[in-house]
Length: 299
Ligand code: BQF
Image (cartoon, rainbow, N blue to C red; front, side):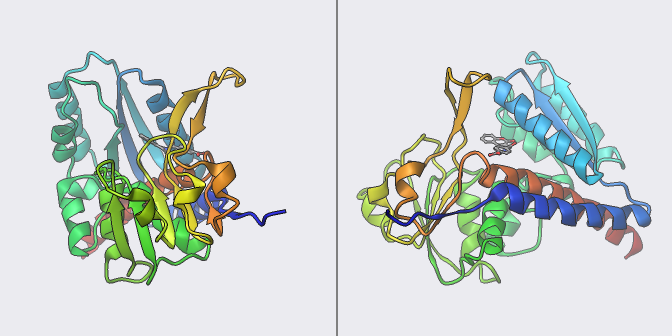
């Protein structure tokens, strides 16, 4: 019997964070602030509708007021920008996000740029990205922050470790590298980013103490690419058809889980790994944004 990896339970750790958020929300309410999150969803992408429902439910479970705007696919960029302006000016809305991907005619970057940086729940505004890169306090993007929290809370502090990230997206790979390379507690990692043009990819991933798969290709990471005893974090959440499911699909990670688990020290499952952490960190960001309004008003 080969030994198998510890399965890192992201759902359970996210639930611990929900508990902290409930306490923080109660404290804010006692001071007269009701944390509010606005979500803007344009179009009818089924996965996006599921994600938005997850976020709405998470707000409900932690006492955060959610304002969900579901708009038809025909909505123009101008109309979205007008809504963002309204939400920027709405004192009940401490944080907001636009669900990605937006329909083609809408330029997502222009929309994110219109969000006030202090209300940027996803931490994707260039001001917050810039602060992250410079090691200044700001709102940190949810998935990278969730990966860091998942590692720390499951006993695998990245400090001093070689973290290899496969994937260079603005949503995950780049901000995660910036976060973990910082000179700061729970960071201080040596970070390598790999991507589709990387030569000898397997030789590099085999060097990882912590391997983060974030390229969006189901089961791309095979056992031979993983060092014995590595910690493997699977950020992949691709919908693949599965006729054995009632829904007709399942979520597939970027890691060949059943084989890699025989070699790794610890591994995150999909679902139930990074996904729930992304949502939990969104709630944390909302609380942070709400708390900042108190500090602005009271000095
Ligand atoms: C789980 C997302 C790709 C592109 C855009 C829990 C979520 C997912 C999985 C969720 C994701 C992924 C979100 C699980 C939000 C994470 O149990 O494994 C929660 O709701 N996510 C998103 O809003 O946009 C995405 C992935």
